[in-house]
Image (spheres, rainbow, N blue to C red):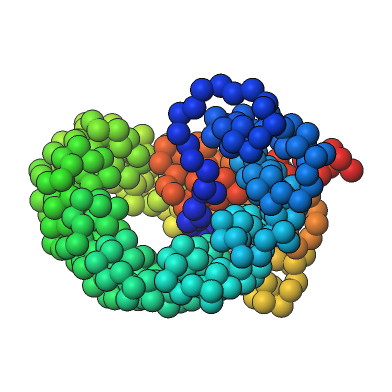
Length: 430
């Protein structure tokens, strides 16, 4: 199924300098001070009182929009910022804040329209380009974002961030070779940005270029030798290259530095098995199998481990478990149902789409993506908000049990939590 996309929105600009406590003095500087000190209710109370004297002060409407936005009241922020823009359509600060609110409300076309107008007025401004590209990436439009980042790169060719963003777009578009090319270029411009090393490591793993993967992981560890994710990648690539002793060293270091994920334990278990450290292998792999019960390889490894430990009854149980996992092929069934989901989405058959998700969950009830997809279908296509609440909640419960859910699932969980809050608010006021 489609991967989640990631957010890249710039916070609305208000200076965050440390200021002493202020009292309402009835001037604009007091409003700014309240906002800078995150005293948003006080700022709004002062704005209300000042509006009674002057309802046409664009700065008051602008600051009211900022305060509401900081309090996550985006509809109110939109009202205030729209009033501010009516009073001064040339103010870039107001325009940028308004576009940001439209973006947060998922009104992408309105946001891009404002940013385009800002660029038309002054094509040297970087912020509107950056924000439009971020919206395209969030909306899963990497090719549209790519064109913007290429433009930004031509404006600032020495900015490694734009080169990295070009690489991100190519990766999201499925062009792995171009992604590697631009990540390497970004790394040569800024070798202290370890997120580049991580992106390259992931790509090299998919491309089975294990030596290049090991090289980039070790280059990152030269910068930060305690980086838990890079220690994992070094361990994985050493394992893939058959260097099991080195893999164990790096994976142990990853665990010591806070990466206690299932993947670390899985490869530690496999490497210990291959090194004939059967007790250690059993210890790690039984931790993994208690969570990942659908991987026949783990059952097979444990069956072989218990065979070596001469506990043949347990060995037999694990081998039978491996057979059960293999029949039927769960992944093939899930993939088939997801193909049906895509077909129903294109046809606009939302009830059938929900049924396909439910059927898939009979075969893999702990798959978080299935619960999220069903919740999103109930929420955005069928207006079955009670069902959406249940599915969002189950999704969050499953992801919360993961030791290392990753950025992708965490982003989806943020959206699910926001929708639960919004649905409950709407139900309350109804």
